[in-house]
Image (cartoon, rainbow, N blue to C red; front, side, top):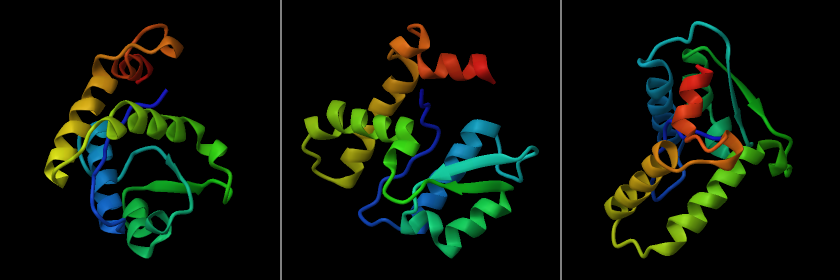
Length: 136
């Protein structure tokens, strides 16, 4: 089960974009920006944005411990990979986006639907938001 807490869309894959998404996720998860109280693991692939000096410095400044999957083993990040596949199949591939703003609105609406209204069989027909609340 994946609850998407933070995301950003850009035309180029830059560490600053990933950092902004991380900060949105931290606000959604903890209600504020600042150093996390307990160690919090941030798992990602070995993409340049996640291993960059900028991103790793930001992650450390919030008290996050980075963990990287083994190169060329996306199955180690299976839930995220599956979420991205679902996002592409159910949203991105079904639209022709005129502008980046149009894409952000449509994708944002779909993510809101996915998190808050779409029941998941693996979650006993609860939404990710309901499961997240129960787990917190």
